[in-house]
Amino acid sequence: MAKLGLNVDHIATVRQARGGAEPDPVTAAAIGEMAGAEGITIHLREDRRHIQDRDLEILRRTVKSKLNLEMAATQEMVRIALAIKPEQVTLVPEKRQELTTEGGLDVIVNHKLIADSVKRLKDGGIVVSLFIDPNQEQIKAAKKSDTDYIEIHTGSYAEADTWEKQQHELEQIDTAIKLARKVGLGINAGHGLNYTNIKAITSLGGIEEYNIGHSIIARAMLVGLDRAVRDMVELLKYA
Ligand code: PXP
Image 1 (cartoon, rainbow, N blue to C red):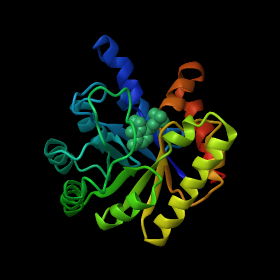
Image 2: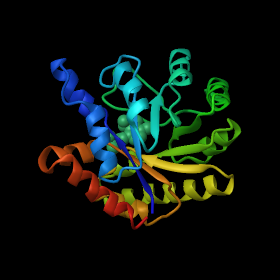
Image 3: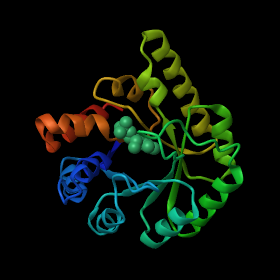
Image 4: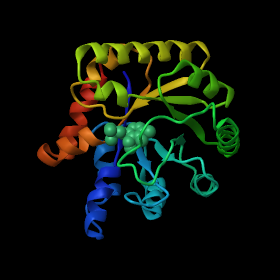
């Protein structure tokens, strides 16, 4: 059975729309854990557009499962991570204008910066994951950076608009899983996954943790967060 890392950034996005105190991602994380999420994921962006430093500090004290901090490989973020000590950091690329994370890290071009960040975080006792596309050269570069995990970017699979394109993307992910296992990397996956497209991915096997936000929070607005999380946890039982 694969684990669900519930991404609560979207709860913070709604809060920030009014600049007030609700809804609170801290409460959402607690409800998510009670419904079966085995990790809470948040992205502290440089522009602080949704998750705030306050959320990270409180979640560090309240999350009982595992706190996974997504962040850019900058000096500021590495310093914050080393002070707060989430169980896991997932390094992601970050562009100011993007609506959400677009594409995986280029671990080949940014090898030194990423490898230095991986080392500093691991020396601080934090498990490190790199968010990368399902690309063999990126996986080899990730291995060289000494990361513990990769998170396979499933965005191209999620956006495939024909059956043929979807099968092609699934094959890329399957090949990526096999190579990552062979070189001894742990494997997570995420981005754009929902209650429908999750099924084909879980049937590939080999993925330990799925980080999912948008589809769960969207369903939660209609049926409640407890049920939305339980529905996804149920689908991950077949992984
Ligand atoms: N994993 C990473 C690295 C991400 O950046 C995101 C988006 O914040 C997710 C998973 C979750 O994606 P979604 O909200 O589309 O489920």
